[in-house]
Image 1: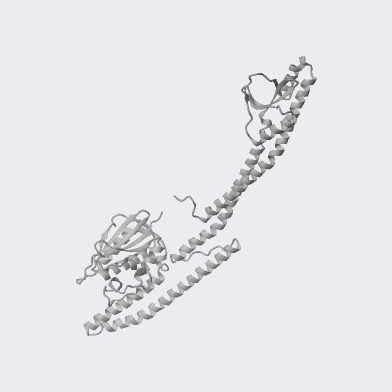
Image 2: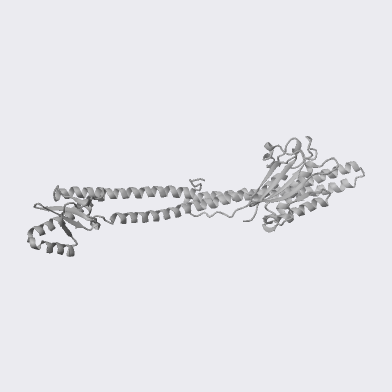
Amino acid sequence: MRLIPQSLLWRTFLLIGLLLGLSVLAWLQLFRLYEREPRSVQLANQIAAIVNLSRAALVSSKPENRNYLLGELSQTEQIEIYPAETGETLLPLAKRPVFERIEQLLREKIGEDTRFASARNGLPGVWVSFHIDEDEYWVRLRRDRLDSSAGLQWLGWGAAALVMALIGTYFIVWSVNRPMKRLAEAARAVGRGETPPAMDEGGPAEIQTLASAFNQMAHDLKTAEDNRTLILAGISHDLRTPLARLRLGVEMSSDTTFRDGMVADIEQMDAIIGQFLDFARSGQDDSASTAGFDLAALTAEVATHYDSVGHPVKLEGADTPLPFEGRRQALKRALHNLVDNALRYSLDAEGNADITLRLARDGRFAQVDVLDRGPGVPPEHAERLKQPFTRLDVARGSADGSESGAQGGSGLGLAIVDRIARQHGGQLQLLPRDGGGLTARLTLALPA
């Protein structure tokens, strides 16, 4: 479990939020320090005034009227005065800087023998003692005279300011992160061979520059791709026409051996030209339109095709429908390429091959495996073989499994399959098969 978020949005938000929180705490501490002394002096003056007035009233009144005066002070001024008693239970004031400062100031104003308590005989309040001659009295004040709500108010306003600042921070970071997220999605689309819509070039100058540069790059790549497709289409047209005439002439030849060899060469040249076109237009022809279809039915259709041309292919896992959304024609081309590749390297002397086409589901992905009993591919060369125009020098890299490479190949078949897999949110893997051979695994992302 990662405690630190990975996204730029939340990392920036948490960092700024932490700084704002520390700033608010620092300001609250400064407020407490600068507010403590004025508040202590003010409260000490108020209590001293109450005590002095109460003492003056008691001193100036007749002894027989003091009880009446105490009752009046309690009812009208909410100031309660009690004579001190022996054996009374006192609870001291809390050890807080404000209270300690008030005690110090009151002893200077009233007398050093002044006592303080937060409760007397179980009765809570703010108790302050004073003397009249040899008699000691207690003044009881309400606790709210000392407990000011200003600190809580400042804390509340500070919390409110922090929340508003965090909300503003989130929207600021989100507005910066949103075009970057769109840019990442567009970059992934370019990596899949797609042409993303143009990025919005609004916002801050840096975002405008980045979006403009990306749009120009995508446009240049699209132009280069279109030019390549046009060039290869022209090559196909220009080469296939004389090839057709050449084949016609060869088939009219009376030399059977010469004719069969030339026809095989011409068919191979035509297949190579077809692979050039498939690689150039993958993702741009009729396969570019996505639609829903049954992947199991498509797999069975490919197997049926090879059965009809005399190359039986074992089919596994296609009994249950597997709904899929993608480019049906492109996936069909990819499966044909994989089966053709397996046939090329696993046919025995009698023209037979042990090839299996297997369909399975693995969580959110569909897996289509093409298994053969050919020479296989060394694991260290598996990724390199998926690059365009790449072939090994020996074993499986040669078209016929020999070092001569007599039957040749364009080196584009696996590159085409890999591109189609990435366009469908998956990948192509070349894995060793148990017992010898190769497992070409096509992984495709299933619709959510």
